[in-house]
Length: 408
Image (cartoon, rainbow, N blue to C red; front, top):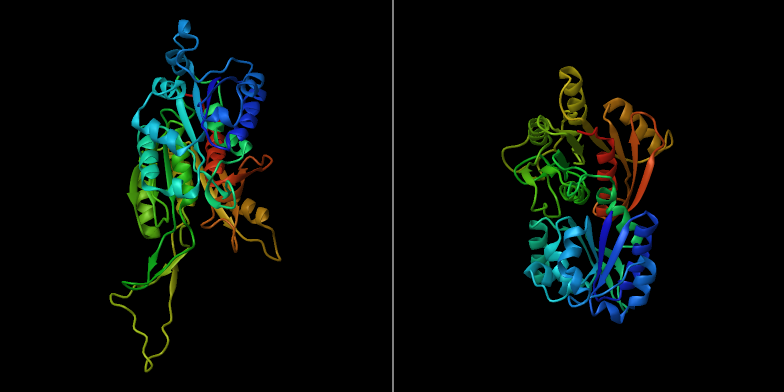
C-alpha cells in the first residue's frame, strides 16, 4: 500500500518515526511529508533513512513530477501524526500553503488525522468545530490519548503510542482491496450503544454506568472503514458521530424495536449497548413520594427481552438476516468461574458469531478512555486480546469483523 505520512510541528513528532518503522516493517511504501515546523523537531535525514524515499515540504521540489498533485492522487492512505491544532485548522479551511496541505486537498484515498496538542487547544471550540468539519467530509480523526503532555501538564491531547495508532489503522491497512475501496465499502452496519434507562416514575429510572464511548468509537470506525452505519443510541455521555444514521431510544423495549427493525437490512449487527436485564413491572405515573407515614416502596422487576438471542434466532429460523452478529459481554469473575469462563458460556448461550468481552468493575471500562477487550468466536479459535484507547480497540474489532465477512 502507498502511504503518505504527514508530520505536524509538535514535540510528539518523534513518535512518528516509530510509526513509520511499523509501516515499513508491514511492507508498505511510505512517503513522509513533514511541515516546516516538524523539521524543528525531527530532521529530514531521519525520515529519508527510515522511509527510503526523498523528503520535502515544499511544492517547488520535484516540480517535474508535479509532486504537489501526484502524491495525493497516488496515495492509498494519508496519515497525519501528529496533527496539530494549526494543521487541523488549515485542513478544515482547505488551505494549501505547503506540500502537506496540498496533498490533503488532492487525496482520494482515506485520510486519517491523529491529533496531538495541549488539552486546552483540543477542547477549544474552534478545534472542536474543525474536527467536526473534517469528520463531516469523511476524514477520520482519531481521538487523542489522555496522559502526560509537554511540561507538567496532563490530560486529553497526548499523541497515542505508535503501536496503538497502527492498530487503529488496521481496517485501512488490511488488503489487498480494489483501488479506492475500503474494508467495509458497500456494507450496512448496525451498532447499538449506551445504557438503557428503565423508568420507575417520571423522574427516576434504573440504569447502568455505560458512557456509550465504545459504541460510538465502533460506529466511527465502521463509517471510516466505508460502511453505511446506523447507530441506535440509548443514554450516552458522548456525542454521536455526524456521518451516521442515528436513532435515539431510552428503554430496553425501545432499543429492541429499533434494533430488530434496522437489523433486517444490515450486513453486520454490533450489540455494544448496555441493555438492562430487568425493568420495573410498573412505572408510576407520578413521582413516588418519600413520606414518614408510609411504608418503603417495594419494587417488582420483570425480565427484559434478550435482544441478542432474538436476532440470532430470527436469522436461524428465516435463513436470512445479518451475516455477522457481534455481542458484548461485561463480566466480573467470582469464586465459581473467571470472566473468560462466563464469556464462553454466554457465547454458547447466545449463539452469536463473535463476542467481545470486557472485564468490568471499579475504574474498569465504564466511562474510561482506554480498555482491554477479548474477542471470542463460536468456532472456538484462540481468543484475541486488544488493549488501548476505545478508538484503537474499536478499529481492531472492525478490522476483525471485515476479515470475517465473506467477499462479495
